[in-house]
Length: 192
Image (cartoon, rainbow, N blue to C red; front, side, top):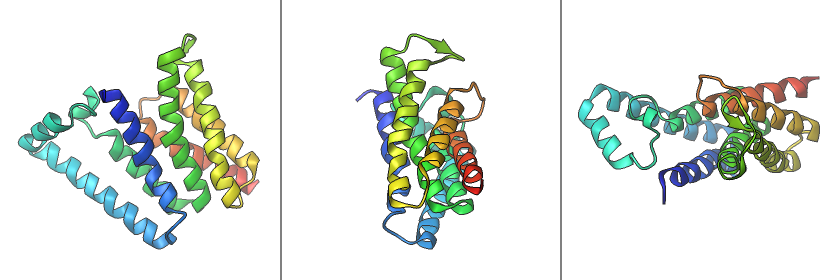
């Protein structure tokens, strides 16, 4: 399995774990679980940057799935966990579920389609990849909309927000910006 394939699978499965778990355990138990895993990752990141030998071992064993920039900076997984914790802590559970699924499904869909079939570029990304992101966000967003009390309009606006955030040339990890941005937009639309 190539590094990109491994990263994409980890993104999809790891990113979807807590939103799926939210359907089966209570909110407090979920927050404790997310908090514990996030704290573990933050501790792991602190150790690997504080102790050169730990980081050397991390790079040695995880290099197939680490991006080059992640060798000496926090991993996308850490940003992902921080955003998951924040959206579940601060917002409605179904908004959080949708926002995290947008990131865990939409971002890899954009990457796969953009690499395979993308020809039209905007800000270094492909419009075909963005189309795949939007479509996958709309489809996966129906899960929390069907089970929860979210209106389809909220999901549509959230999916568009997640897609635009993924496309924009932001210099912040999109594992952080996609869930936080789309969740904020959905929360605002829910209030209106």
